[in-house]
Length: 313
Image: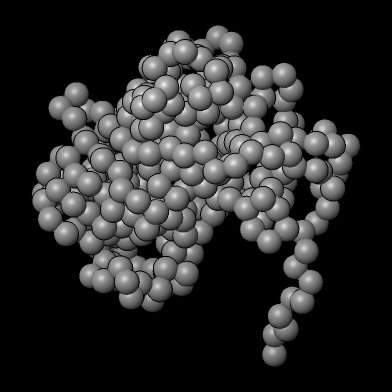
């Protein structure tokens, strides 16, 4: 007989590692909500534990994680105006978040930190270029160059055998519309890296999907040593995709920008859709295009929710 843990209050933070009060801004892009903080005048040494506490929807501010905005690192191989670091609700760091990058662009412009409408942003997945679309002097939408997708399993990384009988994937060979077993069932899936790992899984009826059971089964699957984000999709038309997403480290979220890009790429290479489509998420819609230059472009909203001061305790 197992007992339910009665006291789920969070473990206190070591207050010596953080200032007593931290200014923050809550923002959301298609419902993907993060807590944004500046790192221009100080550096957060231990953002992981802070992400866990601040993201808690009962005992904290509530969100899918935290995003830190600051100056670019010196000595980069590419020119950057700013840098973003992103930490999931479980404290783990992710190299990139498409929805968060749009919010970073709005944060920087609307708060007067830049007057540029094209921003070069340093991320853990490399350079991302943000094109800001203004309305009444504020950012209404952002188009992000998400870079080129990678389809070879080692890019995720993914340890699945791609060719029958091979113990490891053939280098350069994609995992596209191939079988994988999770949660006691076998699915067809396509693996895509958008700077972070994604597995796109067609599902007949997203409304009946038990994502709280299947999501963790894919996230912690033995083929993914660094875990994986899983996009469950329904192709509605050549230019429309429905999607629900289970993000590693955060669980189900209302949207995932890199996941929407991975879904479009997966659909295009399997000839299920065109190379440009609307991805319909639980939190809104994103316009995704896999352009002829090889890059994936994402356009979508970014919204301020509220600002405040978090008291470290």
